[in-house]
Length: 397
Ligand SMILES: *[C@@H]1O[C@H](CO)[C@@H](O)[C@H](O)[C@H]1NC(C)=O
Ligand SMILES: *[C@@H]1O[C@H](CO)[C@@H](O)[C@H](O)[C@H]1NC(C)=O
Ligand SMILES: *[C@@H]1O[C@H](CO)[C@@H](O)[C@H](O)[C@H]1NC(C)=O
Ligand SMILES: *[C@@H]1O[C@H](CO)[C@@H](O)[C@H](O)[C@H]1NC(C)=O
Ligand SMILES: *[C@@H]1O[C@H](CO)[C@@H](O)[C@H](O)[C@H]1NC(C)=O
Ligand SMILES: *[C@@H]1O[C@H](CO)[C@@H](O)[C@H](O)[C@H]1NC(C)=O
Ligand SMILES: *[C@@H]1O[C@H](CO)[C@@H](O)[C@H](O)[C@H]1NC(C)=O
Ligand SMILES: *[C@@H]1O[C@H](CO)[C@@H](O)[C@H](O)[C@H]1NC(C)=O
Ligand SMILES: *[C@@H]1O[C@H](CO)[C@@H](O)[C@H](O)[C@H]1NC(C)=O
Image (tube, rainbow, N blue to C red; front, side, top):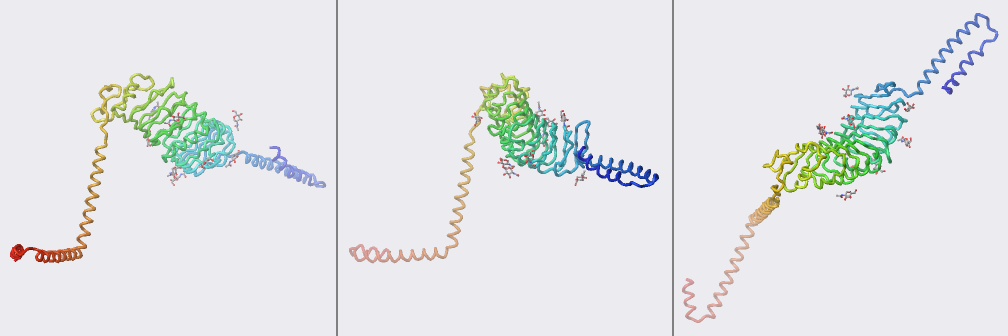
């Protein structure tokens, strides 16, 4: 304010020093002019002063009272450059921001605590794209199309983030590894709630959750997990709820490794395979108290046990699957047969194409044989005694 007032002063001063030796009338006019100029300058200075304050971005609605800025459904292709500094709650949803670049939120948004980036078609989270938000508590990145996440997207060391929603946003099966790397930097060590549902996750690499010690709620529902090692959750000593419903789990090995006291696990809607491998899990299920609604867990395989509650299985009667070796052996025999038949066909074809040569060759051999036989006859006749010679010549005729 002080600086801009000083720039305005010279103009006023120039007006006021003009005019010694003018008439009283002219002096009155001069006073009026001075007044008008003062008002004009005041307005101009106020205007330029307001320009120094960041405006509400063109595609957004801002409410200072609610400390909220909304940029919803505006086809934005990038995060606006400036926001009012009062913003605590920033909602940028349903736009087309393909990449969240390094320093996208590099303005001094010191008080920003809630950031919603839901449904923006974001494919790439660059390193440091979200690093500079020092008060961020809740981040919603759900319903995006992430293919690349830099390991430093959330920063290089601890951040204030408590809730992260990444539901329905993974479009690359390597993304769970990339998230694991981002977690390992320690940048998410304040996280209490993590949502990863609907991401088609098939496998959770060992150590994925090694550096989120404060995690209380983990949602892995609606993925394609077939198995888990309980080691994965070993470091999560504060875990309160673990949602694994709507996956493809067949059984859990070592379920007894879930040692968190207050934990509640949701396991409904999976593909439990009720053969001898489920023994440990079924036995555990009968005694544990941490599985929510254990009666709802049904076998989906084998055919004769389909729909049977896992809790009601007679463990001693579970069958072990017949090894599928035979069928693979059969297919390899079929394959061998086809190869042999092909070789045979090719051999016959070669013979057929060479039939003239072969005929000639056979004639040659026959002639050679005949010559040989004749020679043999001849020698035989010479060496034999006359009686036998007569006999043989008779039989030849
Ligand atoms: C966004 O783009 C779509 C399709 O191009 C168009 O129909 C829509 O009116 C645009 N919305 C705005 C707010 O410009
Ligand atoms: C940020 O929040 C603090 C404490 O609530 C407040 O004193 C400060 O004025 C806020 N900053 C801005 C730019 O609104
Ligand atoms: C963002 O700001 C930080 C410090 O405030 C600076 O170190 C960094 O280079 C900036 N990054 C970009 C991309 O502007
Ligand atoms: C992020 O930074 C890490 C470490 O410097 C680097 O290995 C990685 O390639 C970067 N990722 C992206 C997407 O820039
Ligand atoms: C994402 O999760 C947060 C809580 O962590 C929740 O408030 C928000 O509604 C979720 N977003 C969607 C789109 O479900
Ligand atoms: C998925 O991630 C991997 C590993 O970073 C990368 O090589 C690949 O190009 C990504 N796929 C797509 C479709 O971007
Ligand atoms: C499950 O995830 C798929 C995407 O993988 C999504 O389309 C679907 O709406 C999700 N279902 C539920 C019940 O959340
Ligand atoms: C997973 O990592 C933990 C240490 O982080 C280790 O104790 C455990 O043996 C590993 N499990 C497997 C299957 O590699
Ligand atoms: C677990 O996930 C399923 C499917 O996404 C959802 O319907 C259910 O409400 C979740 N349960 C809890 C306790 O969060």
